[in-house]
Each structure stands twice: as C-alpha cells, then as structure tokens.
Length: 134
Image (tube, rainbow, N blue to C red; front, side):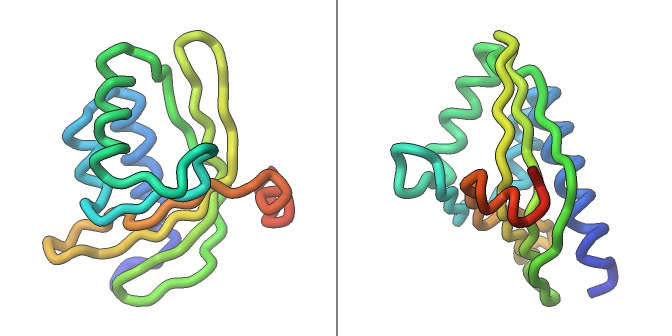
C-alpha cells in the first residue's frame, strides 16, 4: 500500500462529502461500488447500489440535501485492497433538519484502481458512543 489507510479514507470522505454537497451525482456514485450493501437503515435489511442511487438522485433533483460532513476517523482494519473505518456522518437537509450517526465503512480498491465503498453500516448510538464518535 503506497498511501497510508488514513490518507485514503480521508480523501474518500472529503470527495464523498464534496460531491454530495454539490449534488454531482455521477462523481458521487463513482465513489460507490456497484456491489455496495448498506445496512442499519431503519426498516430495511439492506440497501443495494440501485436503491441508493435512485434515492440519492431524487434527493439531488428535489434539492433536499444541503450538505454532508464527516467528523473523526477510526481505522479498524486494512490490507492492500480494503480499509475498514468508523466515522461520524452528519446530513443536513434544506428544511433545517440534521441527522448525525456513526457509520462503519469498508472501502475496496477496485480493478480500475479507484477506492469505492463496498459496505456501509449505520451504527447504533450506543456503539457510536463506545467508539468515541458521539
């Protein structure tokens, strides 16, 4: 691994927040693997790439999202092809509401050399507190 896992994770988080905040759909979804699984969303066992893309595209078009930010970074495991970490995600909506939760993210370096999220898990608040994120 030529770059440190912290550097790769921080660059990915910055790109994810920037592309979501500026509503750059194509650029944002280039950071997400077609094989992604999102877990921990209330009411859903898991969310696929297509489900996430549909929801995100709709939110971008309807200008629901004001901005996204990340705070804190805890690398939990890594190798040459994958990095697992935890961070605190805040999603600010244009109606003034804010959702903040811990997320556990697994990035994978895909065949084209791009690091993309292959797994994201929304953490319960008690786990986020235990990890020092809340």
